[in-house]
Amino acid sequence: MKVVALAGGVGGAKLVHGLAALLAPGELSIIVNTGDDFEYCGLRISPDLDTVCYTLAGLANPETGWGQHDESWTVLEAIKNLGGPDWFRLGDKDLATHLVRTDQLAKGLPLSAITQGLCRQWGVEHPVFPMSDDPVRTIVHTADHGSLGFQQYFVQHACQPVVRSFEFAGADQSAPPPGALEQINEADLVIFTPSNPWVSIDPILAVPGYRNALENKVVIAVSPLVQGQALKGPAAKMYRELGIQPGASAVANHYLDLLTGFVFDQQDEEELEKIQRWRIIPLLTNIIMKDEQDRVRFAEEVLNFGESVLDRSH
Amino acid sequence: MKVVALAGGVGGAKLVHGLAALLAPGELSIIVNTGDDFEYCGLRISPDLDTVCYTLAGLANPETGWGQHDESWTVLEAIKNLGGPDWFRLGDKDLATHLVRTDQLAKGLPLSAITQGLCRQWGVEHPVFPMSDDPVRTIVHTADHGSLGFQQYFVQHACQPVVRSFEFAGADQSAPPPGALEQINEADLVIFTPSNPWVSIDPILAVPGYRNALENKVVIAVSPLVQGQALKGPAAKMYRELGIQPGASAVANHYLDLLTGFVFDQQDEEELEKIQRWRIIPLLTNIIMKDEQDRVRFAEEVLNFGESVLDRSH
Image (cartoon, rainbow over all chains, first blue to last red):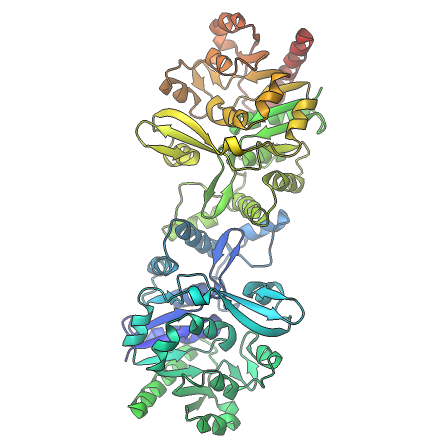
Protein backbone atom coordinates (compact mmCIF):
# COMPACT_ATOMS: atom_id res chain seq x y z
CA MET A 1 0.00 0.00 0.00
CA LYS A 2 1.33 3.45 -0.95
CA VAL A 3 0.46 6.25 1.47
CA VAL A 4 0.79 10.02 1.42
CA ALA A 5 0.40 11.86 4.73
CA LEU A 6 -0.42 15.57 5.01
CA ALA A 7 0.97 17.04 8.20
CA GLY A 8 1.45 20.18 10.23
CA GLY A 9 3.43 20.22 13.47
CA VAL A 10 3.44 18.13 16.61
CA GLY A 11 0.30 15.95 16.27
CA GLY A 12 0.92 15.24 12.62
CA ALA A 13 4.58 14.47 13.28
CA LYS A 14 3.63 11.85 15.89
CA LEU A 15 1.40 9.89 13.51
CA VAL A 16 3.92 10.28 10.67
CA HIS A 17 6.58 8.86 13.01
CA GLY A 18 4.38 5.82 13.68
CA LEU A 19 3.63 5.37 9.97
CA ALA A 20 7.33 5.59 9.11
CA ALA A 21 8.03 2.72 11.51
CA LEU A 22 5.57 0.52 9.60
CA LEU A 23 6.02 1.58 5.97
CA ALA A 24 9.15 1.52 3.78
CA PRO A 25 10.41 4.80 2.29
CA GLY A 26 8.83 3.82 -1.05
CA GLU A 27 5.47 3.33 0.66
CA LEU A 28 5.15 6.60 2.59
CA SER A 29 5.77 10.21 1.70
CA ILE A 30 4.86 13.27 3.70
CA ILE A 31 3.68 16.70 2.56
CA VAL A 32 4.16 19.35 5.22
CA ASN A 33 2.56 22.74 5.84
CA THR A 34 4.88 25.70 5.25
CA GLY A 35 2.27 28.41 5.85
CA ASP A 36 3.92 28.86 9.28
CA ASP A 37 7.28 29.69 7.74
CA PHE A 38 8.66 33.08 8.59
CA GLU A 39 11.77 35.24 8.62
CA TYR A 40 13.41 35.84 11.98
CA CYS A 41 16.67 37.79 12.36
CA GLY A 42 17.24 37.25 8.64
CA LEU A 43 16.79 33.48 8.91
CA ARG A 44 14.13 31.44 7.16
CA ILE A 45 12.40 29.27 9.72
CA SER A 46 10.10 26.38 8.74
CA PRO A 47 8.62 25.23 12.07
CA ASP A 48 6.41 22.39 10.80
CA LEU A 49 9.00 20.99 8.40
CA ASP A 50 11.54 20.97 11.23
CA THR A 51 9.14 19.34 13.68
CA VAL A 52 8.32 16.56 11.20
CA CYS A 53 11.95 16.02 10.18
CA TYR A 54 13.36 16.18 13.71
CA THR A 55 10.67 13.70 14.82
CA LEU A 56 11.43 11.29 11.97
CA ALA A 57 15.17 11.65 12.66
CA GLY A 58 14.71 10.90 16.36
CA LEU A 59 16.09 14.35 17.15
CA ALA A 60 12.89 15.94 18.46
CA ASN A 61 12.45 17.15 22.00
CA PRO A 62 9.71 14.86 23.36
CA GLU A 63 8.73 17.37 26.04
CA THR A 64 8.12 20.42 23.88
CA GLY A 65 7.26 18.75 20.56
CA TRP A 66 9.35 21.42 18.80
CA GLY A 67 13.10 21.86 18.68
CA GLN A 68 15.77 19.24 19.34
CA HIS A 69 16.47 17.18 22.42
CA ASP A 70 19.70 17.81 24.36
CA GLU A 71 19.55 21.34 23.03
CA SER A 72 21.70 24.20 24.33
CA TRP A 73 20.76 27.90 24.38
CA THR A 74 24.07 29.76 24.23
CA VAL A 75 23.10 31.99 21.32
CA LEU A 76 19.64 32.79 22.68
CA GLU A 77 21.19 33.81 26.00
CA ALA A 78 23.65 36.07 24.18
CA ILE A 79 20.78 37.57 22.12
CA LYS A 80 18.93 38.33 25.36
CA ASN A 81 22.05 39.94 26.82
CA LEU A 82 22.14 42.22 23.77
CA GLY A 83 18.49 43.16 24.22
CA GLY A 84 17.64 41.32 20.98
CA PRO A 85 14.42 39.46 20.12
CA ASP A 86 13.89 36.29 22.12
CA TRP A 87 10.21 35.49 21.59
CA PHE A 88 11.01 32.65 19.22
CA ARG A 89 13.03 30.01 21.12
CA LEU A 90 16.10 29.43 18.97
CA GLY A 91 18.18 26.50 20.25
CA ASP A 92 21.81 26.26 19.14
CA LYS A 93 21.42 23.08 17.10
CA ASP A 94 18.08 24.21 15.73
CA LEU A 95 19.74 27.48 14.69
CA ALA A 96 22.21 25.53 12.55
CA THR A 97 19.26 24.13 10.57
CA HIS A 98 17.93 27.63 9.93
CA LEU A 99 21.37 28.94 8.96
CA VAL A 100 21.99 26.11 6.49
CA ARG A 101 18.48 26.46 5.02
CA THR A 102 18.85 30.24 4.68
CA ASP A 103 22.28 29.87 3.09
CA GLN A 104 20.97 27.43 0.50
CA LEU A 105 17.88 29.53 -0.25
CA ALA A 106 20.20 32.51 -0.81
CA LYS A 107 22.14 30.35 -3.27
CA GLY A 108 18.90 29.72 -5.18
CA LEU A 109 18.07 26.17 -4.12
CA PRO A 110 14.35 25.44 -3.71
CA LEU A 111 13.08 24.55 -0.25
CA SER A 112 12.15 21.02 -1.37
CA ALA A 113 15.72 20.26 -2.50
CA ILE A 114 17.10 21.80 0.70
CA THR A 115 14.73 19.68 2.80
CA GLN A 116 15.81 16.59 0.88
CA GLY A 117 19.47 17.40 1.57
CA LEU A 118 18.85 18.01 5.28
CA CYS A 119 16.87 14.76 5.53
CA ARG A 120 19.82 12.91 3.98
CA GLN A 121 22.11 14.37 6.67
CA TRP A 122 19.63 13.45 9.40
CA GLY A 123 19.10 9.92 8.07
CA VAL A 124 15.42 10.56 7.32
CA GLU A 125 14.63 8.08 4.52
CA HIS A 126 10.95 8.76 3.87
CA PRO A 127 10.49 11.60 1.38
CA VAL A 128 9.40 14.83 3.09
CA PHE A 129 8.00 17.59 0.86
CA PRO A 130 7.28 21.17 1.85
CA MET A 131 3.78 21.89 0.50
CA SER A 132 5.37 24.37 -1.91
CA ASP A 133 8.70 25.87 -2.89
CA ASP A 134 6.87 29.17 -3.23
CA PRO A 135 6.22 31.43 -0.25
CA VAL A 136 2.73 30.94 1.19
CA ARG A 137 2.11 32.73 4.47
CA THR A 138 -0.73 32.02 6.87
CA ILE A 139 -2.18 35.31 8.09
CA VAL A 140 -4.50 35.28 11.09
CA HIS A 141 -7.05 38.08 10.89
CA THR A 142 -8.10 38.79 14.46
CA ALA A 143 -10.87 40.77 16.12
CA ASP A 144 -8.58 42.52 18.56
CA HIS A 145 -5.01 42.54 17.20
CA GLY A 146 -5.44 43.18 13.48
CA SER A 147 -3.73 40.83 11.06
CA LEU A 148 -0.91 38.70 12.41
CA GLY A 149 1.65 36.46 10.77
CA PHE A 150 1.10 32.94 12.04
CA GLN A 151 4.15 32.82 14.35
CA GLN A 152 3.27 36.24 15.74
CA TYR A 153 -0.18 34.91 16.57
CA PHE A 154 1.05 31.52 17.75
CA VAL A 155 4.22 32.31 19.67
CA GLN A 156 4.41 36.05 20.28
CA HIS A 157 0.72 36.41 21.22
CA ALA A 158 0.37 32.84 22.57
CA CYS A 159 -2.85 32.30 20.51
CA GLN A 160 -4.70 34.83 22.68
CA PRO A 161 -6.14 37.10 19.95
CA VAL A 162 -9.69 36.27 18.78
CA VAL A 163 -9.67 34.77 15.30
CA ARG A 164 -11.95 36.18 12.58
CA SER A 165 -10.55 34.45 9.48
CA PHE A 166 -7.45 33.00 7.90
CA GLU A 167 -5.63 33.96 4.73
CA PHE A 168 -2.97 31.98 2.91
CA ALA A 169 -1.12 34.83 1.28
CA GLY A 170 0.65 33.83 -1.91
CA ALA A 171 -1.23 30.53 -2.24
CA ASP A 172 -2.81 31.56 -5.56
CA GLN A 173 0.65 31.99 -7.08
CA SER A 174 2.11 28.85 -5.56
CA ALA A 175 2.50 25.29 -6.82
CA PRO A 176 3.39 21.96 -5.22
CA PRO A 177 7.11 21.17 -5.37
CA PRO A 178 8.43 18.73 -7.99
CA GLY A 179 7.29 15.19 -7.21
CA ALA A 180 4.60 15.95 -4.62
CA LEU A 181 1.56 15.61 -6.90
CA GLU A 182 3.07 12.45 -8.41
CA GLN A 183 3.22 10.95 -4.91
CA ILE A 184 -0.49 11.65 -4.47
CA ASN A 185 -1.36 10.35 -7.93
CA GLU A 186 0.48 7.09 -7.21
CA ALA A 187 -0.90 6.75 -3.67
CA ASP A 188 -3.55 4.24 -2.64
CA LEU A 189 -4.38 6.17 0.48
CA VAL A 190 -4.00 9.76 1.67
CA ILE A 191 -4.03 10.49 5.41
CA PHE A 192 -4.76 13.90 6.91
CA THR A 193 -2.82 13.53 10.17
CA PRO A 194 -4.21 14.97 13.45
CA SER A 195 -3.00 18.50 12.73
CA ASN A 196 -4.94 21.74 12.99
CA PRO A 197 -7.46 21.82 10.09
CA TRP A 198 -7.45 25.63 9.88
CA VAL A 199 -3.77 26.39 9.91
CA SER A 200 -1.96 23.12 9.16
CA ILE A 201 -4.03 21.20 6.57
CA ASP A 202 -5.99 24.05 4.95
CA PRO A 203 -2.80 25.88 3.87
CA ILE A 204 -1.69 22.73 2.03
CA LEU A 205 -5.10 22.40 0.37
CA ALA A 206 -4.89 26.07 -0.64
CA VAL A 207 -1.91 25.37 -2.92
CA PRO A 208 -3.40 24.89 -6.39
CA GLY A 209 -3.16 21.26 -7.49
CA TYR A 210 -3.58 19.31 -4.26
CA ARG A 211 -7.37 19.51 -3.99
CA ASN A 212 -7.80 18.34 -7.60
CA ALA A 213 -5.38 15.47 -7.08
CA LEU A 214 -7.15 14.44 -3.86
CA GLU A 215 -10.62 14.37 -5.41
CA ASN A 216 -9.86 11.02 -7.08
CA LYS A 217 -8.23 9.52 -4.00
CA VAL A 218 -9.27 7.63 -0.92
CA VAL A 219 -8.67 10.14 1.87
CA ILE A 220 -8.99 9.46 5.57
CA ALA A 221 -8.51 12.09 8.27
CA VAL A 222 -7.64 11.78 11.93
CA SER A 223 -9.31 14.17 14.36
CA PRO A 224 -6.98 16.46 16.32
CA LEU A 225 -9.82 17.04 18.83
CA VAL A 226 -10.99 14.85 21.69
CA GLN A 227 -14.09 15.82 23.68
CA GLY A 228 -14.11 19.21 21.98
CA GLN A 229 -10.56 19.94 23.11
CA ALA A 230 -7.39 20.09 21.00
CA LEU A 231 -4.72 17.64 22.13
CA LYS A 232 -2.28 20.48 21.51
CA GLY A 233 -2.60 23.97 20.09
CA PRO A 234 -5.44 26.37 19.38
CA ALA A 235 -7.70 24.30 17.04
CA ALA A 236 -10.69 24.11 19.44
CA LYS A 237 -10.41 27.80 20.34
CA MET A 238 -10.36 28.64 16.62
CA TYR A 239 -13.54 26.63 15.96
CA ARG A 240 -15.30 28.41 18.82
CA GLU A 241 -14.20 31.87 17.70
CA LEU A 242 -15.40 31.10 14.18
CA GLY A 243 -18.83 30.15 15.58
CA ILE A 244 -18.49 26.38 15.19
CA GLN A 245 -18.87 23.94 18.07
CA PRO A 246 -15.48 22.21 18.24
CA GLY A 247 -15.60 18.43 18.04
CA ALA A 248 -14.82 15.38 15.92
CA SER A 249 -17.80 15.97 13.64
CA ALA A 250 -16.74 19.58 13.08
CA VAL A 251 -13.38 18.30 11.83
CA ALA A 252 -15.05 15.67 9.59
CA ASN A 253 -17.33 18.38 8.25
CA HIS A 254 -14.32 20.60 7.60
CA TYR A 255 -12.98 18.06 5.09
CA LEU A 256 -16.42 16.80 3.99
CA ASP A 257 -15.97 16.96 0.21
CA LEU A 258 -12.68 15.05 0.34
CA LEU A 259 -13.21 12.36 3.02
CA THR A 260 -13.88 8.66 2.62
CA GLY A 261 -12.96 7.69 6.17
CA PHE A 262 -12.55 9.43 9.51
CA VAL A 263 -10.71 8.37 12.66
CA PHE A 264 -11.80 9.86 15.97
CA ASP A 265 -11.66 9.13 19.64
CA GLN A 266 -13.87 6.58 21.35
CA GLN A 267 -14.75 9.27 23.91
CA ASP A 268 -16.58 11.06 21.09
CA GLU A 269 -18.95 8.20 20.29
CA GLU A 270 -21.95 10.53 20.45
CA GLU A 271 -20.73 12.15 17.22
CA LEU A 272 -20.76 8.82 15.32
CA GLU A 273 -24.28 9.13 13.96
CA LYS A 274 -23.72 12.57 12.49
CA ILE A 275 -20.52 11.46 10.75
CA GLN A 276 -22.17 8.33 9.33
CA ARG A 277 -25.04 10.46 8.06
CA TRP A 278 -22.43 12.22 5.85
CA ARG A 279 -21.53 8.76 4.39
CA ILE A 280 -18.06 8.91 5.93
CA ILE A 281 -16.70 5.55 7.11
CA PRO A 282 -15.83 5.95 10.82
CA LEU A 283 -13.17 4.45 13.05
CA LEU A 284 -13.71 4.99 16.76
CA THR A 285 -10.54 4.23 18.71
CA ASN A 286 -8.05 5.67 21.18
CA ILE A 287 -6.36 8.42 19.15
CA ILE A 288 -4.10 9.73 21.92
CA MET A 289 -0.41 8.98 21.32
CA LYS A 290 1.35 9.08 24.68
CA ASP A 291 4.72 7.61 23.69
CA GLU A 292 6.58 6.15 20.75
CA GLN A 293 5.01 2.66 21.10
CA ASP A 294 1.63 4.37 21.07
CA ARG A 295 2.49 6.11 17.80
CA VAL A 296 3.17 2.74 16.14
CA ARG A 297 0.10 1.15 17.72
CA PHE A 298 -2.10 3.97 16.47
CA ALA A 299 -0.43 4.14 13.03
CA GLU A 300 -1.13 0.43 12.62
CA GLU A 301 -4.80 0.95 13.46
CA VAL A 302 -5.00 3.82 11.00
CA LEU A 303 -3.36 1.76 8.25
CA ASN A 304 -5.62 -1.24 8.91
CA PHE A 305 -8.61 1.08 8.81
CA GLY A 306 -7.28 2.59 5.58
CA GLU A 307 -7.08 -0.85 4.01
CA SER A 308 -10.65 -1.66 5.00
CA VAL A 309 -11.81 1.70 3.62
CA LEU A 310 -9.96 0.94 0.38
CA ASP A 311 -11.68 -2.49 0.19
CA ARG A 312 -15.08 -0.93 0.75
CA SER A 313 -14.59 1.89 -1.72
CA HIS A 314 -13.47 -0.37 -4.61
CA MET B 1 42.43 67.34 22.48
CA LYS B 2 39.66 65.88 20.33
CA VAL B 3 40.68 62.89 18.26
CA VAL B 4 39.05 60.86 15.50
CA ALA B 5 40.58 57.47 14.65
CA LEU B 6 40.01 55.64 11.37
CA ALA B 7 40.28 51.90 11.82
CA GLY B 8 39.97 48.54 10.15
CA GLY B 9 40.34 45.29 12.07
CA VAL B 10 42.91 43.91 14.49
CA GLY B 11 45.81 46.41 14.26
CA GLY B 12 43.50 49.39 14.27
CA ALA B 13 41.49 47.96 17.16
CA LYS B 14 44.62 47.62 19.31
CA LEU B 15 45.61 51.28 18.94
CA VAL B 16 41.99 52.40 19.39
CA HIS B 17 41.89 50.36 22.61
CA GLY B 18 44.98 52.17 23.87
CA LEU B 19 43.58 55.56 22.86
CA ALA B 20 40.29 54.80 24.62
CA ALA B 21 42.20 54.14 27.85
CA LEU B 22 43.68 57.65 27.66
CA LEU B 23 40.88 59.77 26.19
CA ALA B 24 37.36 60.40 27.51
CA PRO B 25 34.36 59.42 25.33
CA GLY B 26 33.95 63.07 24.36
CA GLU B 27 37.59 63.20 23.23
CA LEU B 28 37.76 60.15 20.97
CA SER B 29 35.48 58.78 18.30
CA ILE B 30 36.21 55.97 15.89
CA ILE B 31 35.18 55.51 12.25
CA VAL B 32 35.41 51.90 11.13
CA ASN B 33 35.71 50.25 7.72
CA THR B 34 32.60 48.37 6.62
CA GLY B 35 33.87 47.43 3.16
CA ASP B 36 34.49 43.93 4.59
CA ASP B 37 30.84 43.51 5.52
CA PHE B 38 29.08 40.60 3.89
CA GLU B 39 26.04 38.36 4.00
CA TYR B 40 26.55 34.86 5.33
CA CYS B 41 23.69 32.40 5.77
CA GLY B 42 21.33 35.37 5.61
CA LEU B 43 23.17 37.25 8.33
CA ARG B 44 24.84 40.62 7.96
CA ILE B 45 28.37 40.37 9.29
CA SER B 46 30.53 43.45 9.97
CA PRO B 47 33.94 41.98 10.83
CA ASP B 48 35.87 45.20 11.46
CA LEU B 49 33.08 46.86 13.43
CA ASP B 50 32.87 43.76 15.62
CA THR B 51 36.63 43.55 16.11
CA VAL B 52 36.79 47.21 17.17
CA CYS B 53 33.73 46.98 19.44
CA TYR B 54 34.69 43.64 21.01
CA THR B 55 38.18 45.01 21.66
CA LEU B 56 36.85 48.19 23.27
CA ALA B 57 34.38 46.13 25.32
CA GLY B 58 37.12 43.80 26.56
CA LEU B 59 35.30 40.91 24.86
CA ALA B 60 37.84 40.23 22.12
CA ASN B 61 39.76 37.01 21.79
CA PRO B 62 43.38 38.10 22.31
CA GLU B 63 44.75 35.07 20.45
CA THR B 64 42.84 35.40 17.20
CA GLY B 65 42.17 39.15 17.19
CA TRP B 66 38.67 38.40 15.87
CA GLY B 67 35.68 36.93 17.67
CA GLN B 68 35.04 36.82 21.41
CA HIS B 69 37.04 35.22 24.21
CA ASP B 70 35.57 32.22 26.05
CA GLU B 71 33.63 31.50 22.89
CA SER B 72 31.77 28.24 22.22
CA TRP B 73 31.17 26.68 18.81
CA THR B 74 27.97 24.63 19.22
CA VAL B 75 26.20 26.10 16.21
CA LEU B 76 29.25 25.87 13.93
CA GLU B 77 29.66 22.19 14.85
CA ALA B 78 25.99 21.59 14.06
CA ILE B 79 26.37 23.44 10.73
CA LYS B 80 29.34 21.18 9.88
CA ASN B 81 27.29 18.11 10.78
CA LEU B 82 24.65 19.28 8.30
CA GLY B 83 27.25 19.76 5.58
CA GLY B 84 26.67 23.51 5.70
CA PRO B 85 29.18 26.30 5.09
CA ASP B 86 31.88 26.55 7.74
CA TRP B 87 34.57 28.70 6.11
CA PHE B 88 33.63 31.71 8.22
CA ARG B 89 34.20 30.87 11.90
CA LEU B 90 30.92 31.74 13.60
CA GLY B 91 31.19 31.51 17.37
CA ASP B 92 27.97 31.20 19.39
CA LYS B 93 28.23 34.57 21.14
CA ASP B 94 29.49 36.26 17.98
CA LEU B 95 26.49 34.80 16.14
CA ALA B 96 24.15 36.57 18.55
CA THR B 97 25.68 39.90 17.45
CA HIS B 98 25.02 39.07 13.80
CA LEU B 99 21.45 37.93 14.53
CA VAL B 100 20.60 41.08 16.47
CA ARG B 101 22.22 43.29 13.81
CA THR B 102 20.38 41.49 10.98
CA ASP B 103 17.08 41.68 12.86
CA GLN B 104 17.44 45.42 13.37
CA LEU B 105 18.52 46.03 9.76
CA ALA B 106 15.42 44.10 8.63
CA LYS B 107 13.36 46.43 10.83
CA GLY B 108 14.84 49.41 8.98
CA LEU B 109 17.37 50.69 11.52
CA PRO B 110 20.58 52.09 10.05
CA LEU B 111 23.84 50.31 10.87
CA SER B 112 25.13 53.33 12.80
CA ALA B 113 22.14 53.33 15.17
CA ILE B 114 22.41 49.55 15.57
CA THR B 115 26.13 49.85 16.37
CA GLN B 116 25.34 52.56 18.92
CA GLY B 117 22.77 50.26 20.57
CA LEU B 118 25.13 47.30 20.66
CA CYS B 119 27.89 49.49 22.11
CA ARG B 120 25.51 50.58 24.85
CA GLN B 121 24.85 46.91 25.71
CA TRP B 122 28.57 46.14 25.68
CA GLY B 123 29.46 49.18 27.79
CA VAL B 124 31.52 50.77 24.99
CA GLU B 125 31.39 54.49 25.78
CA HIS B 126 33.47 55.98 22.96
CA PRO B 127 31.34 56.64 19.86
CA VAL B 128 31.96 54.03 17.15
CA PHE B 129 30.72 54.85 13.63
CA PRO B 130 30.51 52.50 10.68
CA MET B 131 32.07 54.40 7.76
CA SER B 132 28.60 54.44 6.15
CA ASP B 133 25.06 53.24 6.67
CA ASP B 134 25.02 52.47 2.94
CA PRO B 135 26.40 49.22 1.57
CA VAL B 136 29.95 49.60 0.29
CA ARG B 137 31.67 46.33 -0.65
CA THR B 138 35.38 45.86 -1.15
CA ILE B 139 35.95 43.73 -4.24
CA VAL B 140 39.39 42.24 -4.81
CA HIS B 141 40.13 41.86 -8.50
CA THR B 142 42.70 39.07 -8.77
CA ALA B 143 44.96 37.76 -11.51
CA ASP B 144 44.05 34.13 -10.93
CA HIS B 145 40.64 33.91 -9.22
CA GLY B 146 38.58 36.61 -10.90
CA SER B 147 36.80 39.12 -8.69
CA LEU B 148 36.27 38.16 -5.07
CA GLY B 149 34.26 39.67 -2.26
CA PHE B 150 36.67 40.67 0.49
CA GLN B 151 35.80 37.88 2.91
CA GLN B 152 36.02 35.33 0.09
CA TYR B 153 39.52 36.61 -0.65
CA PHE B 154 40.52 36.99 2.98
CA VAL B 155 39.00 33.94 4.67
CA GLN B 156 37.87 31.47 2.03
CA HIS B 157 40.99 31.89 -0.16
CA ALA B 158 43.31 32.79 2.76
CA CYS B 159 44.69 35.83 0.81
CA GLN B 160 46.38 33.50 -1.69
CA PRO B 161 45.02 34.98 -4.98
CA VAL B 162 47.25 37.58 -6.66
CA VAL B 163 45.78 41.07 -6.34
CA ARG B 164 45.40 43.27 -9.44
CA SER B 165 43.20 46.06 -8.06
CA PHE B 166 40.54 46.95 -5.53
CA GLU B 167 37.04 48.26 -6.02
CA PHE B 168 34.75 49.75 -3.38
CA ALA B 169 31.42 48.90 -4.94
CA GLY B 170 28.65 51.28 -3.93
CA ALA B 171 31.03 53.89 -2.53
CA ASP B 172 29.90 56.52 -5.07
CA GLN B 173 26.33 56.23 -3.79
CA SER B 174 27.28 56.16 -0.12
CA ALA B 175 27.56 58.81 2.56
CA PRO B 176 29.01 58.98 6.06
CA PRO B 177 26.48 58.18 8.79
CA PRO B 178 24.90 60.99 10.80
CA GLY B 179 27.46 62.60 13.09
CA ALA B 180 30.64 61.16 11.59
CA LEU B 181 31.68 64.20 9.55
CA GLU B 182 30.84 66.46 12.49
CA GLN B 183 33.29 64.46 14.62
CA ILE B 184 36.01 65.07 12.04
CA ASN B 185 35.13 68.76 11.69
CA GLU B 186 35.39 69.20 15.46
CA ALA B 187 38.56 67.11 15.80
CA ASP B 188 42.00 68.56 16.49
CA LEU B 189 43.72 65.40 15.28
CA VAL B 190 42.82 62.51 13.00
CA ILE B 191 44.72 59.23 13.34
CA PHE B 192 44.90 56.57 10.63
CA THR B 193 45.47 53.52 12.85
CA PRO B 194 47.85 50.74 11.74
CA SER B 195 45.28 49.05 9.51
CA ASN B 196 45.69 47.87 5.93
CA PRO B 197 45.85 51.00 3.70
CA TRP B 198 44.34 49.20 0.68
CA VAL B 199 41.37 47.46 2.24
CA SER B 200 40.81 49.10 5.64
CA ILE B 201 41.53 52.82 5.31
CA ASP B 202 41.01 53.32 1.55
CA PRO B 203 37.37 52.10 1.69
CA ILE B 204 36.64 54.74 4.34
CA LEU B 205 38.32 57.43 2.20
CA ALA B 206 36.24 56.25 -0.79
CA VAL B 207 33.01 57.32 0.93
CA PRO B 208 32.28 60.83 -0.43
CA GLY B 209 32.78 63.45 2.25
CA TYR B 210 35.64 62.06 4.33
CA ARG B 211 38.50 63.11 2.06
CA ASN B 212 37.18 66.68 1.83
CA ALA B 213 36.73 66.89 5.59
CA LEU B 214 40.26 65.55 6.16
CA GLU B 215 41.93 68.03 3.83
CA ASN B 216 41.62 70.77 6.47
CA LYS B 217 42.75 68.55 9.34
CA VAL B 218 45.97 67.50 10.95
CA VAL B 219 46.22 63.82 10.03
CA ILE B 220 48.82 61.39 11.30
CA ALA B 221 49.08 57.77 10.20
CA VAL B 222 50.65 54.76 11.86
CA SER B 223 52.41 52.25 9.64
CA PRO B 224 50.99 48.70 9.71
CA LEU B 225 54.31 47.46 8.23
CA VAL B 226 57.62 46.78 9.96
CA GLN B 227 60.67 45.82 7.92
CA GLY B 228 58.47 45.41 4.86
CA GLN B 229 56.25 42.89 6.60
CA ALA B 230 52.67 43.34 7.79
CA LEU B 231 52.25 42.75 11.52
CA LYS B 232 49.07 40.89 10.58
CA GLY B 233 47.24 40.32 7.32
CA PRO B 234 48.07 40.69 3.63
CA ALA B 235 49.12 44.37 3.37
CA ALA B 236 52.75 43.65 2.39
CA LYS B 237 51.73 40.96 -0.10
CA MET B 238 49.27 43.43 -1.65
CA TYR B 239 51.95 46.10 -2.08
CA ARG B 240 54.26 43.58 -3.80
CA GLU B 241 51.53 42.28 -6.11
CA LEU B 242 50.67 45.85 -7.09
CA GLY B 243 54.34 46.46 -7.98
CA ILE B 244 55.21 48.60 -4.95
CA GLN B 245 58.03 47.73 -2.55
CA PRO B 246 56.25 47.28 0.80
CA GLY B 247 57.61 49.42 3.61
CA ALA B 248 56.91 52.36 5.91
CA SER B 249 57.59 54.90 3.15
CA ALA B 250 55.18 53.10 0.82
CA VAL B 251 52.46 53.54 3.46
CA ALA B 252 53.36 57.22 3.98
CA ASN B 253 53.27 57.70 0.21
CA HIS B 254 49.87 55.99 0.06
CA TYR B 255 48.38 58.79 2.20
CA LEU B 256 50.73 61.51 0.90
CA ASP B 257 48.17 64.22 0.09
CA LEU B 258 46.52 63.92 3.54
CA LEU B 259 49.40 63.39 5.96
CA THR B 260 51.01 65.84 8.37
CA GLY B 261 52.74 63.25 10.52
CA PHE B 262 53.72 59.60 10.25
CA VAL B 263 54.58 57.04 12.91
CA PHE B 264 56.73 54.06 11.94
CA ASP B 265 59.00 51.53 13.52
CA GLN B 266 62.54 52.29 14.63
CA GLN B 267 63.67 49.23 12.66
CA ASP B 268 62.75 51.16 9.50
CA GLU B 269 65.06 54.12 10.17
CA GLU B 270 66.53 53.86 6.65
CA GLU B 271 63.17 55.09 5.29
CA LEU B 272 63.29 58.29 7.38
CA GLU B 273 65.00 60.45 4.77
CA LYS B 274 62.47 59.60 2.08
CA ILE B 275 59.56 60.41 4.36
CA GLN B 276 61.10 63.72 5.46
CA ARG B 277 61.69 64.64 1.83
CA TRP B 278 57.87 64.54 1.44
CA ARG B 279 57.62 67.12 4.28
CA ILE B 280 55.88 64.61 6.56
CA ILE B 281 56.78 64.93 10.24
CA PRO B 282 58.14 61.54 11.36
CA LEU B 283 58.02 59.61 14.63
CA LEU B 284 60.35 56.63 14.82
CA THR B 285 59.43 54.38 17.73
CA ASN B 286 58.48 50.84 18.67
CA ILE B 287 55.08 50.40 16.99
CA ILE B 288 54.53 46.76 17.98
CA MET B 289 51.73 46.32 20.53
CA LYS B 290 52.34 43.00 22.30
CA ASP B 291 49.85 43.32 25.14
CA GLU B 292 47.33 45.70 26.65
CA GLN B 293 49.94 47.77 28.51
CA ASP B 294 51.78 48.12 25.23
CA ARG B 295 48.65 49.50 23.57
CA VAL B 296 48.41 52.25 26.17
CA ARG B 297 52.17 52.94 26.02
CA PHE B 298 52.02 53.26 22.24
CA ALA B 299 48.76 55.25 22.22
CA GLU B 300 50.39 57.72 24.60
CA GLU B 301 53.38 58.10 22.28
CA VAL B 302 51.06 58.62 19.32
CA LEU B 303 49.03 61.25 21.20
CA ASN B 304 52.15 63.08 22.38
CA PHE B 305 53.44 63.03 18.82
CA GLY B 306 50.06 64.27 17.62
CA GLU B 307 50.27 67.21 20.03
CA SER B 308 53.74 68.11 18.86
CA VAL B 309 52.58 67.89 15.22
CA LEU B 310 49.65 70.15 16.08
CA ASP B 311 52.03 72.67 17.70
CA ARG B 312 54.29 72.64 14.65
CA SER B 313 51.46 72.97 12.15
CA HIS B 314 49.79 75.97 13.81
